[in-house]
Amino acid sequence: MKKSETLRIAIVGATGLVGRTFLKVLENSFIPIAKLDLFATSRSAGTSIVFKNKELIVQDIKNINFANYDVALFSAGKDASKEFAPLAVKNGTLVIDNGSYWRMHPQVPLVVPEVNFEDAFKHKGIIANPNCSTIQLVVALKPIENKFKIRKVEVSTYQAISGAGQKGINKLLKEIETGVPVDTLSKHPIAYNINFHTIQSKFGFSEEEIKIINETRKILHRKNLKISATCVRIPVLVGHSEAVSVITKNEFSLEEVEEVWRQSPGIIIVDDPQNEEYPTPKMVEGTDSVHIGRIRRNPAEKNGLMFWVVADNVRKGAATNAIQILEHLWKVAPERIFSFQKMFK
Image (tube, rainbow, N blue to C red; front, side, top):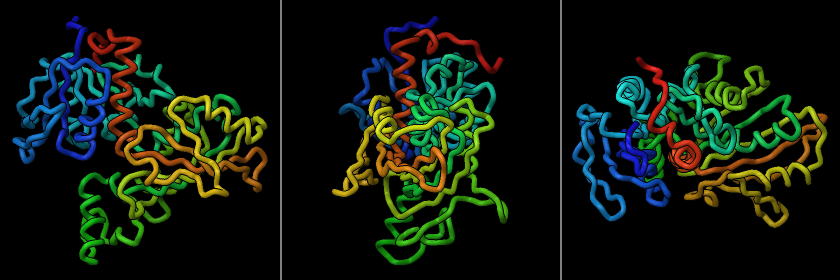
């Protein structure tokens, strides 16, 4: 077993939006870091990034020796995760992956600490971070599932363009500046407009909608959960919003629902709509909690509940959730960081 007093950490995809946010979150984490190295593709190698007043130089991912690290935080895209995560595991390095490649793999736990942290103990070298929209949704759903049992979920998301990374932010800012559409992500402008995620066929769901459906079922351990989703990108830089409609098996009062959420970790209630107090993307930017408001009954359904959910998609929806997984392991089961049954032999 490797030494367990401190952690040696590699960040793979360090120059991207989430990779840089990993560093911001780690700066305020209690995790004792003995070694921290940054990696990216050859195109970004040589970039300088400051961490705790120290300049770190980004290295080429092709030169990484995973045997030198206890943990690798990945946010470098599906191809990098597919290629390099198995190499890390073979060298005894725990991977916490923000990409989508491993999320639905049957041997890879998909974890949101407030919801299903116990699943992390089952890892065989890789723990997957869910999609940003899924994370905030399941944080809100889990207390309702525990107390009232969910029969059906319908969600519509209004997603900040940072969900597409720095290129999404650049597209929005350039279009606002010039008034000319930028042909990335979509042929449609995002400034003063909306974009849907990639849709493969007429009458079909987008990739994002499918992610939310499948990932929510996996995280809640409800493989047959009735859930549907409509996802759209909006011209907001940071902060995903979701309009959620739930039908429960058990009866509830709105006061009970609000109290259940208030007692749940990672949730902040902002619900005074008559005074214009409700969660907004601007309100949640830079925070790590899931904000809930607009709590009300659905008059069209027996045991119908409607609410509004907003979270910082770059932090709680990506970097913070990954760091929280590591923090929880360090607190309760550090041995699962240093020693584990390997998925890849």
